[in-house]
Image (cartoon, rainbow, N blue to C red):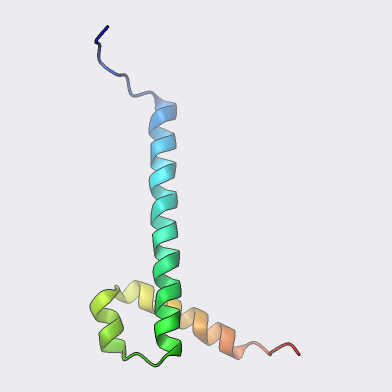
Amino acid sequence: MGGQVLDYEAKRIARAAAEKAAKETEEATSIEAVKNMLSFGVPVEKILSKYPKSVYDKALKLVEQENSQPKEM
């Protein structure tokens, strides 16, 4: 039987959730990469040539927060 495949609401919601999760995972990976670049002293211009400024800003904020917290012994 060949018929039109129906796009049910549940399928649409599941697909949207999967896409959102993939984007969040990609952003988290990018932020972690930028944090590593910052720790190795990579110039800002070089980082921004590969990653968007929004990712750079989030990574920089996280690094600053981590550095301001007292270290455990």
